[in-house]
Amino acid sequence: MLIKFDSPVGGFIMNSDIAVQLLKAMGHSGTVPSAILAGDIPAALARLKAVLAASPRAATEPSDSDDKEDTEVRVSLQQRAFPLIDLLTRAADKGAEVMWTRD
Image 1: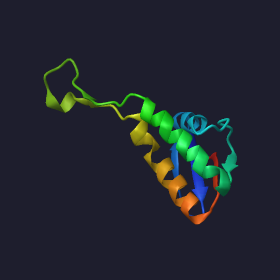
Image 2: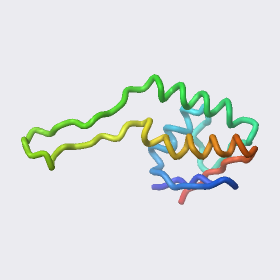
Image 3: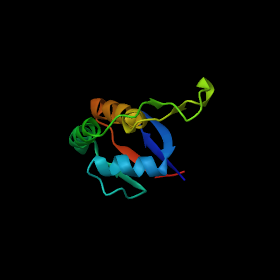
Image 4: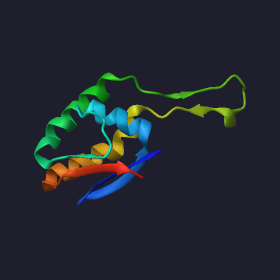
């Protein structure tokens, strides 16, 4: 399932498992649909960045075969969080709220 994030400053769609994990890292309950008010965004953004800084980063890991095409790239939580961090940063700068719903 997908979660759609929307704000007057932009929007994007994300896998619901990752989205809920990031929402909880922000200090939110993870409830969908929901929203965060402009005044609450800076604190939520700081919590999210702190959680991401403490989480391990994924790297490219070779598979069992020697074929370079079989190299599996694992995407870190930090990379997956980039669109949300960007949206929250822009929303905080403009004093806008951010909402999310199931898509």
